[in-house]
Image (cartoon, rainbow over all chains, first blue to last red; front, side):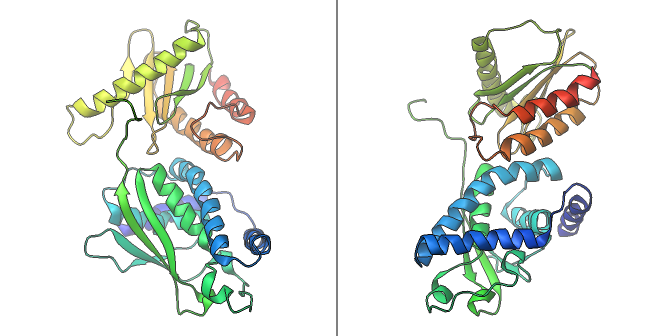
Length: 190
Length: 136
């Protein structure tokens, strides 16, 4: 199953995706984070929140592009969703394939391990003692996942558990399925 | 290949886009189009529950009469694309896919477009017409 997904991702990346200079992405993202840090005067927790919010708005829109370009059908279960995110989603947008690991026994939580992170190329966190402990540099990715999955009826929570920029061994994002969003009628209707 | 008209419905069944490409269909008032969209949304929801095909998961996909063929494509995000074409039209799937791609590009990627609201993106209409008109 994951071999075909890898092929779908690779094929979409090669044929149907317009490419852009990687430095442009890295520099644009970097300037967003740096500007947020300046605007919020070092309140890194707030910066994390803003990055996640921006990512959420991106994710809401990105999912349609993803579905249109890759023609993916519905995933049968959350495990398949995880494989799709890692092998097709990240491949198509960032040309990376994080590894899916650390499943919980109820299959509702997994980790994405990033061997490479184009957003964080050439980045070193500020040396003010707090950034290293408070700022999740790539937090926008968490928001993107949350927004995108919400549009396909999955409410998830995504957050970073560790980051190479912070001095940890690996960059790891933890994704939890909170609930499947069934069609809800507007209030006042039976 | 004659495409008569396109309707796009949001997740709640509200009409967010409507465009005729051919004189083959009678002109309706804008209220009629809203009613048509809402009705279809309801029918689609019902048919997905009573579908005799087990595990099909989806609702009504094609409605064909001797005057027209209506095809519905529902994305995984709940947006519905309704294409009205002449009967016995093959390859509407190709058209629908392409319209979906145009939607993902010119509508969703417009940061000022509010999701689920009526589509007023000039670039989307321009590209849509450019894609569909030559086929008539």
